[in-house]
Structure formats: C-alpha cells, structure tokens
Length: 228
Ligand code: MN
Image 1 (cartoon, rainbow, N blue to C red):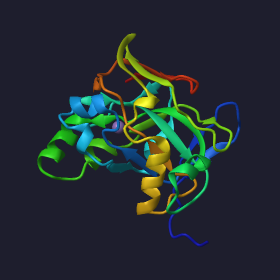
Image 2 (image 1 turned 90 degrees about the vertical axis):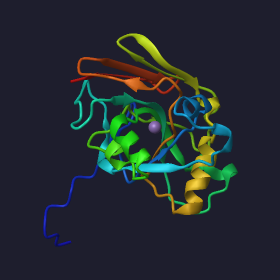
Image 3 (image 1 turned 180 degrees about the horizontal axis):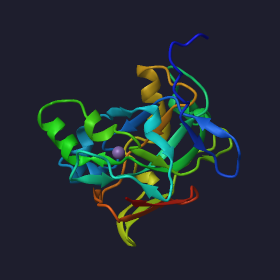
Image 4 (image 1 turned 180 degrees about the vertical axis):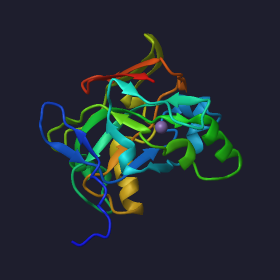
C-alpha cells in the first residue's frame, strides 16, 4: 500500500503471562451500568436502557507507574471498570452465545474530565471532550479465558492513596457482559479487537497530581499508577 503519510501505529495492550499483544480496534464504553453509580450521578437506574460512548483506540494503553494529568480540567475523575476484549467479529449476537466472543478480561480506568463532561451534558453536546482525551483509558494486562467461560462474580474496587473509594461486584452490573455484547452487535458489527469498558460502580471522585490510584478485580489482577 502506498500511503501518502506514515500510517499511525496500531494501538495495542499487553496480555498477562504472554509475549503476544492485543491489537485495539474500537473502544465502547457503557454509561451508568451500576445502579448505585447511576443514582450518585442523579439518574434512575431502573428506567434507563443502556447507552454508549466511545474512546479512540489509542486512548487505551498499558498502564504504567505514572499517568499524566490531562489539560483543560480542574475536576479529573477516576472510574474503575471491568474491561472486555473481543476475540472475533459478529452481528446480531444472541445473549447465550455472547461469551464465546470474549478473549479475556482486565481492569481499566475510564478517566474522565468531569467538568467538561458536565458542561457537555448541560448543553446537550457530545461527551468526547470529557471522556475521549489522549490516554484516557489506562488498562492492566488482559487475562485470557477459556472460550465461553462466563465471568459472574468478582469484587471490583479502587483506592486513592490507600483509602477505598469504590467497591462493587461484577454481579451488580445492570447490563451483564453477554447482554452488552448482544446489544452492541444488534446496532453495529462487533469486530475482533474491540474493547468494551463496562461501567463503574459508585464512589467516583477526583484525583490530583501526586495521587496514587490502586485498583483491581478479583482474578483479573491489580493496577497501580501515580497521577503526575
Ligand atoms: Mn465509565
């Protein structure tokens, strides 16, 4: 192929216990997928169908020991999330088949410029400036699963400077992983390499430079980074 400029690098994530990398295609994020978080954001979780926003593929990256505070915000929030990695493409996927599309799971952060997101909400504008900035999705390594193996219960938590801020369980997801996969695939073709950030439990809040974020999901490892 004769590209007129150098093609951009393929974004990728590392895999636990493997030298292979996962090539990132698109990043779907589920909004308000834990009832207690929907309530803390001022919404009724019982009446809302799921909704989605997206981050660019290169927003997700292997989390390092340092994570750079982004520009143009004075209210940067953490959101700890279960992240799903898609192994193969499919349309109109049935809920009972959805687990066979999962390559693995991991822990990720949906970092959010809450002030910019809040302004956008108020004005009926898109969320990208709040949600989809550079490096807004630091992720831990992918934990591969046996094909079709469901993930039902797992504690999900996040600490800032050693103080617990978020604590929930994957079983509390309003829309489960198979439901989310099925719903996305009825609206557009799900593709191998897609990433799904499944939403955050309650307890979201701000971090500032110097804060240490430590988060994890049972069985899927822990991540640690310092905001600089
Ligand atoms: Mn989120």
